[in-house]
Structures are given as structure tokens and as C-alpha cells.
Length: 251
Length: 67
Image (tube, rainbow over all chains, first blue to last red; front, side, top):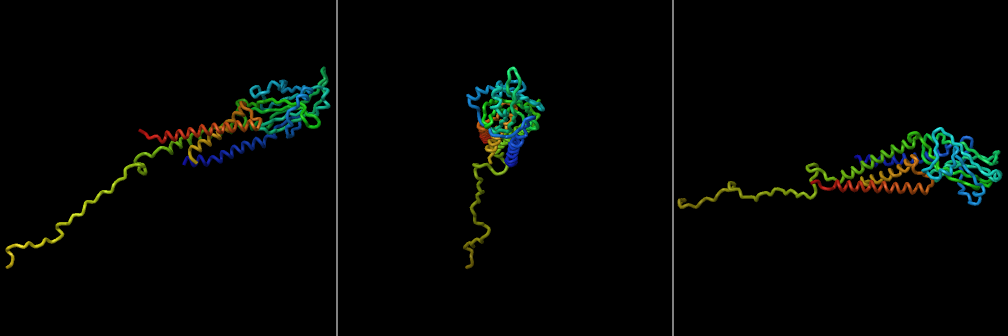
């Protein structure tokens, strides 16, 4: 009975997972970029070393250089409602060459969104060119959190990358449970543990032999023999005895 | 569906869910699709094998005659 219920809930669990994945895919474009145009666009790959050396750009996330967040363990952080100011700074002489500064968010190999900003020359000294993007998670923060990979890149007018750098950002919630996805995932974890342990207990039960005296006799028990009937004996009182031939008979 | 295979499938799904959960808590990034698929596959296989073997062991123990 329990096994039947367990297998019946399996499709429901698959549907839950599918909804979760679809939620990620659908709400992905909801990533908002305040003050910057957000468009999904394909990634162009890394810049060639020669061009990257010429550009020599630096990117800061709320004043912190993103080159220090090249691994998930050293990820920068952002909280709910917070907006991060991402500043691209590069040589002023390349301002006419670089037409776009972009910030891409990647999840499961998919570029969720791209935020763009046009660079402008900033008075010095030293005179440099910079582009600013105000970036926030927006409504997506209510759905999920975690570590995401960001790719900051500078693009030429032809659309090719002149420079790019990847870094990690950890979208944090106060108790790591403020967003919906961790709660759903925790419930799923507990449910799967319960179903798995129930199946293990069921496996033990289904192998256990039934108790003696309940139901059919166990296999291998000696078959009971039918009581043997005694051989039939002639009934002595049923027949009439032959008359004895005596000497005192009629003469 | 036997109880052992049911336990194995529960373990496999549990592994995948745990990978998602770990990403949400910031311990593992699911950035590249290849890396993510490797994480999911390893977690599903480990979970399925562990729960499947546990169910088999429980079945063997249950089949042992009581003295």
C-alpha cells in the first residue's frame, strides 16, 4: 500500500522539479539593471591576449576590484534591495574604439541577461574612460539566491570582445532562507529522504517471511497425510450361519 | 517497481536536489552547463547507489531467519 503511494508520488516530484527549472528559465530575464539596458545576447568568448593587454581595463563592484573575486569562495556579495555600482575604467585613448561595456549573468551555461552601458571620458588627472552600470537582482531575489558568475566585458563596434573578466557574486539572504527556492529545495530534500527511507523499510518488510500461524503454511513444511482407513472386515452378524448337521436329526 | 529501485530513484533525485540546494547556499556555482551536468550526474549516481545498496542490505537482513 505504502509502496504504491510512494511510486504514485514520483511523477508529482518530477513535476515539482520541472516547475523549479522552468521557474529559473522564465524568471531569468527578470534580472533588472537600473539605468542600463538589459538584453539577452550570445556570449562572444574571451578577448585575445593582445587586445586585452592594450585595453588594460579594471572593473569595480561597489568599489571592490572584481579581480579579487575570481573564485566562488572569494565571491563578492549583494543583499536584498541593494544596488551594486559596477564601474569599468580603461584608457581614454580607447574610448572611440570601445563602444559598449557589458555585464552578463550566467547560470547553468545560459546567459540570463546582459546589461550594457556606453563609455564616456572622465576628466583626470589621469584622463580615463569609464562606463557605469547600476545592477540589482530585482524581483528575482525573491525567488532564488546563491553564487552566480558574472562576466564583465568591453566590446568594440563590431560586437567582438576587446576585454573580459569573470567574477562571482553571492546573492545573500539574512538566514539563507529568505528566497523561495531554498525553502522549496529543503522541503524536497526532506520529502525525498522520507520516501527513500520508507522504500528501504519496505524492502526489509517484503523480504521478511510471514509469521507462523498467519495465512498459508510456510513452504517446505511436511504435507499432512490423510488418515488411513482400516481394512474392511466382514460383518459377523450380517449373515446366517449354516445349520449344523447333528446326529439327532430327523431320521 | 521494487522497493530497492524505488529507494534508488529517491536517492538519485535527492542527490540532484542537494546540488541545487548547495548552489543556493553559495558553496557550488552552477555556471557552465558541462560542470553542472557533471555535478548532477555524480550526485544522482552516488545517491542512487547509496540508497539502492541500503535497500538491498535491508532486504537481505529482513530475509534472514529469526533464531
